[in-house]
Image 1 (cartoon, rainbow, N blue to C red):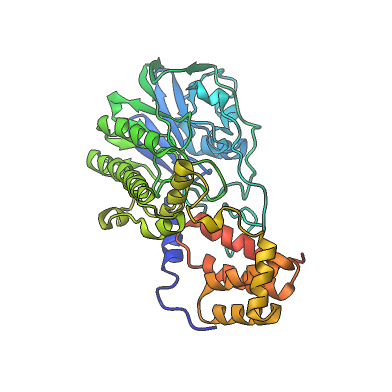
Image 2 (cartoon, rainbow, N blue to C red):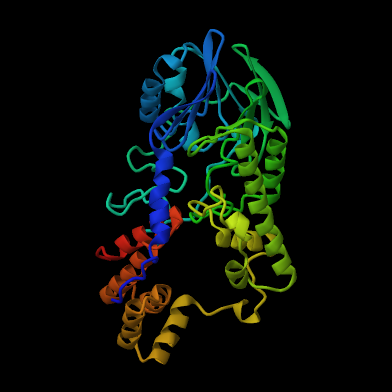
Amino acid sequence: MSAAAPDAFAGREQLRASSIEFRPDVVEITDGVFAAVGYSASNVILIQGEGGSIVVDTSANPGDARAIVAAFGARLLRPVRAIVYTHNHPDHSGGATVFAGDDHPEIYSHQTLLDAAPEFGRGPRGGGDAFGTNLPDALFINAGTQREYGRVTPHTREGFLPPTRTFAGDEETIEVAGVRMRLMHTPGESPENIAVWIAAKGVLIPGDDFYKSYPNLSPLRGLRLRPPEKWIASLEKMIALDADYLVQGHMRPILGKDQVREALTAYRDGIRTVLEQTLAGIRAGKTPDELAHEVKLPPELARSPYLQEYYGCVAWTVRGIYADTVGWFDGNATNIFPLPPAERAAKMLRLSGGVDAMLTLAREAVAAGEFQWAAELTDCVLAVDAGNADARRCKAAALTELGERQLNATARNYFLTSAQFLLKEP
């Protein structure tokens, strides 16, 4: 195999460096507000009040929640008077029983949280896992916006408590333990997401509408497009607050009015430019494959520390917007009723001279560093003979090389888990 260029693994090393965001720490945001970062797949925010505490989001499971309670120590003033769920994802709502204890707090959310259906996702295929749950430790770096997602303790609903107080409109102002909070419905990464605004302290808690990565509008693991127009509108609301502190659900908080404005503005602009470029390309008759390669962030946004593609991906967002806007068909009449994959593969094998000739081409592609092409060539063999050991090994080599070159954690994890699956006996 040819030697890799010195910068071939720059994305991997940048992803590895990003893991500093998940070092376990209790961060004091301002007087009476603390964030537990790195103890679970999501952050837990503690707000001290008069004669008790408020907890925003509760970590992924009771085990993580107990570790966070210990880390907060005396800063967690009992009783817990209220728990606020920013949204329904299990990594944010799985440890509520531990924080509630015997305190019987009110539990706040938006009404739509009660209606939230489990995320559908695609069925298993080829062993791919965007979170790298079963990757060997030596291959795993992180899960993009979190240290890990379910690798140590699977996420369950064991520690979930249902909301006791919900609101159905755009916002509601509540006061708990002397702390006045504005709960704002801000759909973005999830339809039920709320932002918590504590004006007296300048603290904004955006849930998952902001994290230090390009947003995951069209997840690799298989979900509907998260509507970019709604996400942009929610960010506009948050920018207008002129917050001093941004305490998001993942990665380390953003401290300082200028830094918060820069972060939220970059996020809004990063979504908006991809949406506008993609819609313009659709109107011009471009295909999703063309647009996925052509649409880019402008240089100043591409350099932003808040828009690196650790979790979400511009190209996947483009594909999601295309499918959501004009459907699956790319406009090429050949693709109205394409050949079944196995039939097409059989014809390609005949053109290449057969299985052995195709595998020779694939091995040559790996040796030349053309890893994507190698994977596509081996797919022709596997489409007609899924158990072909030589093809499985060759594709695993190609996917491993692709995975090791990724900045995006979910792409890396998916490539590497798929490669590991191929190396097992079929």
